[in-house]
Length: 118
Length: 351
Image 1 (tube, rainbow over the protein chains, first blue to last red):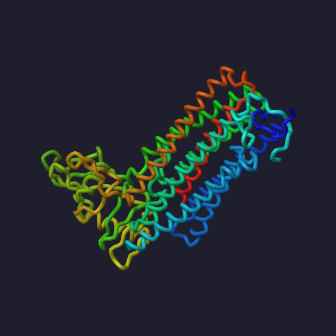
Image 2: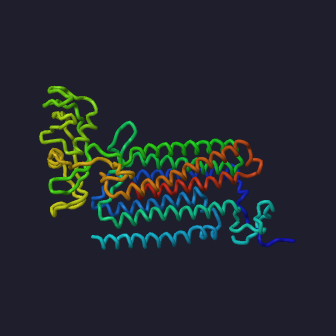
Image 3: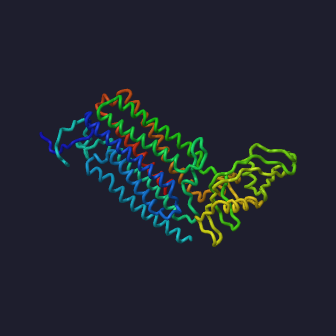
């Protein structure tokens, strides 16, 4: 009987040497990018101190750069970018919604506790 | 793409229910679920750290104050060492993804080479962390000082070396005119802690003798106010150069206890209790050791799992199986460890 529910399956995701060259190129590109971002973070951290007038921008810059690094690690190194869309969303969406809420509520409460005790 | 038929799945790779959800293998999906739960744990810890930091009234320590050492070079090098640790972990993540790629080409030699490099990288990271822990919040040469108006300040700069103590008045052990050359820093800090240094740099030693401290000049001293009890000074204010030296030595030479070093604990009956510490709120170090410790434990178990899989690769277990999916799964865990470190690095050292 012919089956209609068969879909491509990644377990034997073998590839040949040519595809390998392309994949490796991407890996080295991401390596360079992650190293560059880390270097920028360290340089900013060393030269712009927390009492600087630029600090607020630098602080948010750090957070944005961290999220970019994390995205490259998850999507390229962990190959989540190559998985099926439904799988990507099952992993990411519940996590992201919950964490954004947790960050919001705990930092908000933290500041409220601070205000009470000042 | 969903439901699009391209090829028949080998019955060996199908799940028990005869389908493969998300066209992935059971093991890989479960590894992802585990990683999501582990990510929730780490996020919970880091966000709890954020909560504590936001609700604390005392001035929170920043990374470069609590750890700025480099091997062989002493201290005064903020961020460099941790940046190096970050780089080690990124590189070992890269070697891992290269091992996975080699596995997809059924290149056993490549897998062996890159997995071996990954394991070495893991050991390097663990070693670095041991060194970091042993140099974290271990106290500075200047200590934290209480200034004349009651404000407390931490001190950065170059501490001039203590050459010797010349005994001015003899005691039960030292005679007048003796030059003491041993254990100077320790004696100096102990005397400072107990308020036994007096104006002009005269130190009262244990045996009752009084000596003159011969010390080189300090350089680039900066006082950063950490707690203020007068309206003239605010937390975060800085005092530089000559004025800083004047304020610092006025307090140090006052003959009463105005300074403390590091984060010591003292024994109270049967309990070890933390005393006041140089850096600020205790919770900072609690979170630091817990979170980096928990992460270090993940690195450690990651290295162990990598070694087990490495042995499997060497013995050809996965080659015979026809695919290197086990390398991919341990790779997922290893990348996750790197991912967590990216956040630890940002929230403990940068922000």
